[in-house]
Length: 175
Ligand code: 5GP
Image: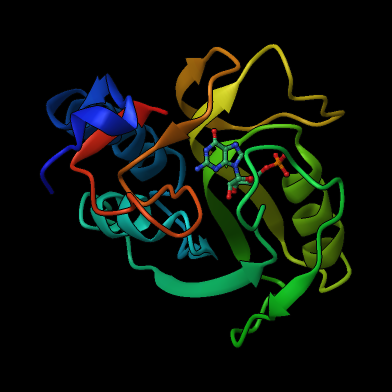
């Protein structure tokens, strides 16, 4: 996608850097899950590009499913409320689950997802996120695999939107 200069979009993380980092994350996941068959759960819509790239670096037998949560709408700030728009279709009980997020901001979404998935009794539950806003996220559990720790900027591209636009940008940008 051609970047509109008037929209004040600044490059932040290049596609080549993302690609390199995904390979590193996948290497760790492949090692940690070498005797397991994890189920990757992508959080829609933002994680669709990240999970597509990550999954192609995964060498262990695995499944993929999706959860859809409410988004920020046209705002850049979390409403503080998370609702479930699409539940899982896979079996969770007794399975090794890896949740794939695009970005952890306040941490509300991952907390919501964790509570939801824990009621389904997985064997294990881990989180991978491409981006993590280190000064904002308040979590009482770890995010196991983090691509990039970033500042409190509103970012777009590589699946991340602003008012449903910019998901097709080939890299991460600051709006
Ligand atoms: P949290 O619940 O951690 O506050 O926010 C998580 C969700 O909010 C992400 O999955 C993403 O959809 C959205 N979000 C948070 N920060 C950003 C951002 O900087 N840019 C975009 N495009 N979405 C964000």
